[in-house]
Image (cartoon, rainbow, N blue to C red):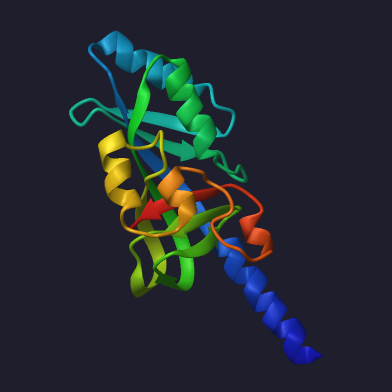
Length: 180
């Protein structure tokens, strides 16, 4: 009984350490400083975003999140689209406690599920950076390239759910497809 309780406490401790710390995204279709300001304003209006820093040289928006808030990448994507543009790239920085990443495996980081398309069994512990490669988060050409990295139907069709046939609870919610 003590062993089971200790294992549960260690597991919960590791889960609380795994979290998204920041996101860098690039928007496409920007032609002037007013466009850039429109995207920045849209991202600042997202409830869980604490700060947006614009890197004009790289046409990149660096986002940090409010403490205790769970970032929703689909909401960020929609904010950019509502401003009249699209997301060209999104890199996520996360803190992960002692995890081994396998190709086509789903990993829960914070409250979100990620399907790693190109992991090769590497062990990670601490800060990792990966790119979201779902439709709407990369160009159509890039999506096609990434979809070719796996035979899983969820990636091939661009549908985000039902990557696996099991009834695992982590597969009942949105799964983001990523490359490291």
